[in-house]
Amino acid sequence: MIKYLGSKRTLVPLLSSLAAASGAQTALDLFTGTTRVAQAFKRQGLTVSAVDLASYSEAFARTWISLDGAAANQAELTAALADLNSTVGEPGYFTKTFCEDARYFQPQNGAKVDAIRNRIESEYKNSWMYHPLLTSLILAADRVDSTTGLQMAFLKSWASRSFNQLEMRDPGLIAGEGFAYRGDALDLAATLPPTDLAYLDPPYNQHRYFANYHIWETLTRWDHPEVYGIANKRIDVRDPDTKSAFNSKREISASIEKLLTDVRAETLILSYNNESWLSKDDLIAMCEPRGHVAVIEVDFKRYVGAQIGIFNQAGKKVGEPKHQRNLEYVVLVGERKRVEKMVGASKT
Ligand SMILES: C[S@@+](CC[C@H](N)C(=O)[O-])C[C@H]1O[C@@H](n2cnc3c(N)ncnc32)[C@H](O)[C@@H]1O
Image (tube, rainbow, N blue to C red):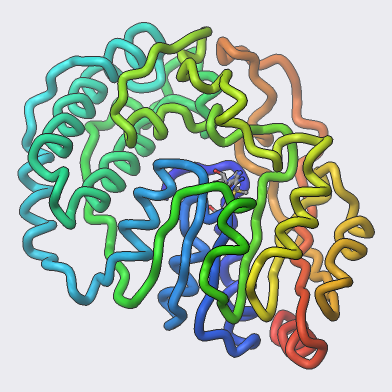
């Protein structure tokens, strides 16, 4: 899985047990990001719909969620991966932009990315393997990057992992049914088919995923955009169209309220964080009109970038993190008995 701000790796066991206790058979993961929560739900037998604004997240969801791994031709995928791994590197846009003008990856790995990505586009565009291969390439690039996990800056000295050779691996498809959607949760929530359970994990501050993961966006779209600044971000990072209401202090309350009204699910699980603009009490007040509310507080380690330090755009350390731990609020909303059962399950 890629390094991802706000990824719920440590929360997955709790979320899985909450989903099981809720008795849900269908679930919606409305801000799916890496898709790891949607993947866990799918593995436990739920039919899952995964939604996100990001193109790379859609590639992940079309690999792990909407594709039925049991029906896929695994031998064909294995052969395609072996063939692509043997591609001879050829420097192009990716190498120039992200390895020479910036230093996110070593040029020999950038040249591989360029050559492999071109082949995926020309040879697999209409294949069922298109998204699995794209996912595999993004994960391969992530394993040899030279960042702290955000693409707002690259490290001053090469990260030791960046010296490794880029290698695509099998993404590990998952058996079962699911659906993938790319779009704004605020537009989609009211129109998606109803589900038993919805998991909402929106951004909680000004940090924009479109800017923080611009390289994955470009690698997925393969649209060779004009870039700007030391970080070589896509020029459309500046467009109002690429901004999310959840990154705006002014819009966040109304946006969460709208979601809470629109989402068509019997039970909701909402993740929120003590470093966000909304307090726990704000959240509870917003959720109450929808049903019984319970809050589980989880103390977990902060994102690794914040533990390492605060960096400026040139990758220079300019500050120390203020504190190392944060609290995740897992808010449950729904029918009282069911919510109480879920709280009970969280304690075991
Ligand atoms: C906190 S992350 C979710 C992390 C995810 N649960 C995981 O474990 O990987 C928030 C996600 O919301 C997405 N996002 C931001 N604004 C959105 C919007 N308006 N509609 C849908 N997705 C949005 C971002 O692209 C990002 O992937």
